[in-house]
Length: 118
Image 1 (cartoon, rainbow, N blue to C red):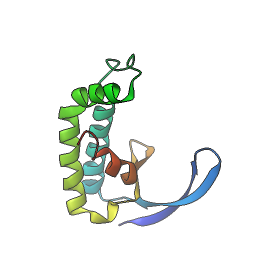
Image 2: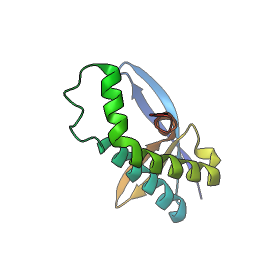
Image 3: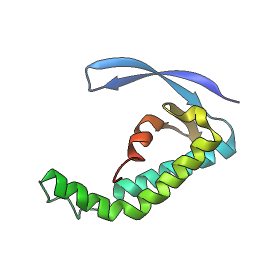
Image 4: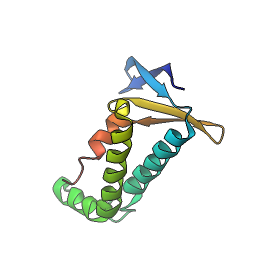
């Protein structure tokens, strides 16, 4: 069963807004969102420090895309699969508890991430 939890989110450290977080209790849904979150972390960590010294934006982006290509393809596939089963996640914050920790997943940011390196 899902319930809505209201959270205060601070954007740009000066603007406070109220964001709704869709709280998941279904273990199958939690497993899918958790796997997607783990894949997103792999995308962000893919380049390691290989592009850190590049200061020119376009060259740095190209370098990041080179290292992120495979994990990003996997992320996009998982993202599409999760949204095909749970379209209500689109444009939402999704929250769940895992290993006694509260975890929030920002599907707004994941939508942007799914368009990287296209």
